[in-house]
Image 1 (cartoon, rainbow over the protein chains, first blue to last red):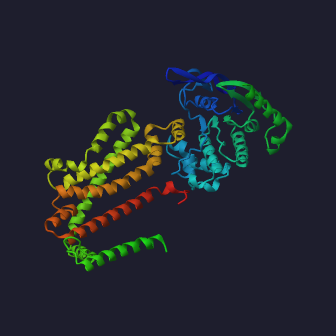
Image 2: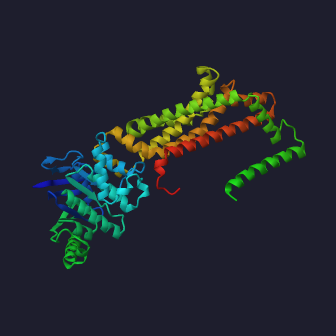
Image 3: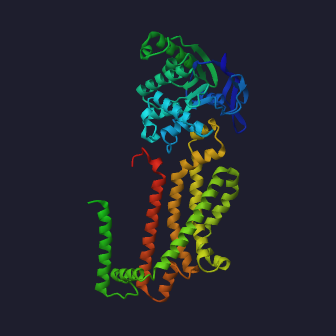
Length: 249
Length: 252
């Protein structure tokens, strides 16, 4: 059964008399617990599509359905991780993780326990009382992921969350993300411009160019994936396939 | 030697030079009283308690005006920062109100509120209003767009976004406005007293001029400067306390 269904979603910016189509009649479905990646160059409309899926933007045509219900506004069933960690610098790491809940209702002891557990899972158990600026970039990204997961969302949407990190840190975070999502059977749509990142993470990859999906492929690499898979011939073959699709578009 | 040593050394050298010039030239006390004379006058004024009511009054006027002006400026800044319509409608008027030299309004306020404290407090409040309005508006307006989207994504209400995101994020800018307001408030209070005051340090300066008592005038200037530095330092202290959490992890 599909959790997310993007049905002919189109998004156009109105700039003066002309309207510029950024997302062009996209159709896509994501099944429960699947990890999908969306690859494309900067400005291809992938971030806009993600915001449409999140309900932050309303499609000009078509619709997005989550568990069969039309998305009309941002929903708590959806966790969103932005390009930057977007942490509140004046609140502790723990309060940042608890932000989605504290905006909804009073905190309960159970919430604090959940937050501590999540921080443990992202390897920041000792950092709960620290402030975001005291953390490295990779640690801040981990806090952002923990914050998105605290409400136990059905779906996690990520918008190039690791783009600003160095290669090694990025690999660590990719592994952590895969582990967390497997643990909670979270459905994921992950946007990136990094082909290798997409292949490593995803069950399915869609290649986007000028607002349209040009190519889609299923990644048949064994799971759980570990570092060595990055150097396998099949991995490179898949990367090349995506690259060719991007060039052809 | 630390820079602090140089700062104090400069003061000592300046005072010594001043003292020396006064003694060497024998210039009249009416024109330029020697620092020793000024300090003695100041000390006597403080010791006999003669200056104290004036210091209290000016401080009280300044603080009342500062608090009122900052509070109203802050609230208006939030209203205008949150509402584009209000900002477009009112901003030209606010600019106009700031271009009017406010001290030129003192005679009018004397007609409205009479001589004394009320007029001075109103002027001081008017002067403090603008930096707070401007900085609050700017502070809560320039928020990282992704953080705004985060709050939208989390279904935060407008009030929650204001209280948990915009005001805390804008706090450093807002407090910089308070710092500017503190300095302006003292100037405002003293100058307003020139015209509208019967008591207070500003009124005393005018009185000392009438009495041709230059040492007293200089002593009052020193007292006002001291007061200004005290309030400024106090503001810095409060600011650092309020921004303690913002500063965590930032290179000092």
